[in-house]
Each structure stands twice: as C-alpha cells, then as structure tokens.
Length: 100
Image (cartoon, rainbow, N blue to C red; front, side, top):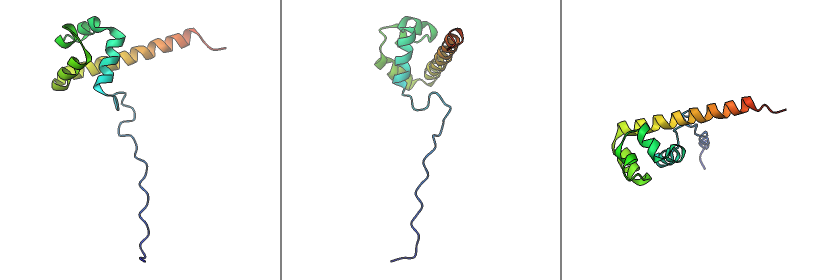
C-alpha cells in the first residue's frame, strides 16, 4: 500500500473552437449542403470550378477540393455566407410573425 493520492480525474475537454461554425463539419457535409441549397448549376457560377460545372458529383468535388486549398477556402466561405443568409431569412420571418 502506498501513501500516494490517486491522480485527479481529467477535466472535461473544452471544445477547441466553440464559435467556429465549420468545426466538426466534414467537407462532404459542406458540399452536400451547398449543392442542396444552390443546386450544381448555381454552385458552378458562384465557385467557378470544373468539378461543379462538368458532370458534378459530391465525390468528384471532394477529390478536387481536398487537393486544392484555394478552392476549398472558396467553398467554405460560400458555406458560411449561406449560413448567414439562412439566419437573416429566419430572423426576418420571426420579425414578421411575432408570437402572441
């Protein structure tokens, strides 16, 4: 028997980026959400890359975006823009329809 006290339990890990809307999201989830919201045609206009314009698919887009940092940045920026727009629309709806 030893006189050592047991080691304290580790504190719960805090999220590293609690206010980052991209934290924890996969690139696949981002591309899928953008394609669902804008459609491939409009997505190709907003981010002019071939994988969105010619025979678009999530898998071909992921392959390209994982290899091309500048394109991934544009896609992530567009995703953040989409989230802001959705929040604005929701806020406008809430302002126009106040609850009694």
